[in-house]
Amino acid sequence: MLSAEAARLAAIEVLCPTASLTANANYPTLAGRNILDSRSTAVQDLDRDREYTPTVALHTRSSTIVRRGDAADAADSECSTEIEIVCELAVVARDESGPDYADAMAGDDPDARLVLAALTSQVRNLLEFSQAGILFRQTIIGVRRIEEETFGVPELGLRWLRNTMRMSAAIEDDSFDQLHGGMPEPMATLFGKLPVGSYAKHKLSQLAGHFLADPRPPLAGIAAFDNPAAEPATDKPILWTGAPHA
Image (tube, helix red, strand yellow):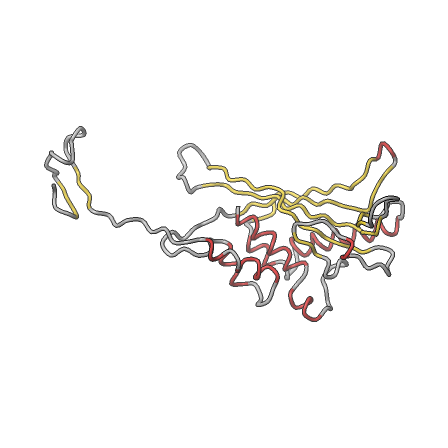
């Protein structure tokens, strides 16, 4: 669903505002500019001069469209999405025979654990409660559930400094303009609200040309017959609007 993608892109703009990127200052989270769209942390994202690099990665985990009931209109659907937000303190890891790669820091540092908890809470506060998060909250209907899970294999005594937040939200169904084409809602509304030069606006602008108009043919007329088994080609209608009866 495109509305699910719109929710994720709105969240990215909230967590890493274009104004902060332009000035390279005043980032709203500990992750700074390291807000990643649909990908994991890579080595090039890391600051090797620091003990660890806080990062946040957003993924659209799933989306659903369910009709409200058997008697509901075809367009009367209840829609939802689950955005997976991975917060971690990333470091450079090394294998004996392979290249360097990015991985979460081992979870044996209680001070670093508090930093990770603060980062995760910053993300939730920005999206769900802050004034800056209004862009995200206007793109969805509402947050339904949030689940947070730490990463590790406790049976083996292994833990890493990575939290996964799964945010389930009710969203609008995609609404396509068949007459004029163009970007569907609610993506079109989000596009208009995004600042010029933003990452999300650039991504959305690439989609607009893919949705072409598909206008319906004009209505030729309407006929009503007093006989339910009437044949329109031979029976005389009792009411006719449009082209002459054949």
